[in-house]
Length: 112
Length: 112
Image 1: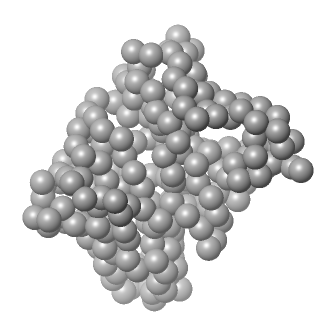
Image 2: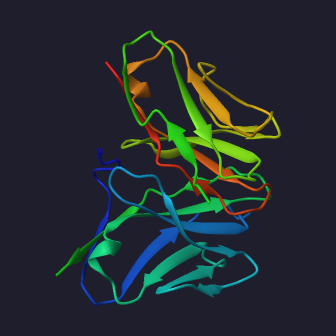
């Protein structure tokens, strides 16, 4: 499949290290945030989400941090693996509608 | 449980033609939304359907339309295709308001 988003900011991380991907959101009314992983030629894959009444949520090897004061979201991946190489998008949603507003994405490259 | 299924996966159309893309949501999901992904504009919301009604619409011209059937399956149509309509079209589904949104693999449309 083709690659979408050829000129994205890139984060290079060595295998086994921790990765931190950052995202700034714009809408103060956003109350739900999601991180997606998109591999080449595939659709976005849900990783983890967080609601605005929380500031931290952990999953398997992933942690999302939310700082509403500065409208900042981060995704931490522990012990990064080659299979984590992909483009990562943050998305925000205001209210209960299904409309998501996506960030520009960050390409994560895992080096051996 | 099967994921969001989109057909066709790849298609090539000529300028001026129209195209219809199909989406089958995850079983039990009643909300279906559509997104366009391009290298230049990233992921942009097209529209959302819930119980056969369009509930939300993005900032796209009227050439882009959609519908949802009683079984929650959805189609989107683009008429009078332009070169700039070349993109990955993504369908996403959720159980309803405020629930996690899952994406399909997308339909790659190339307009020549």
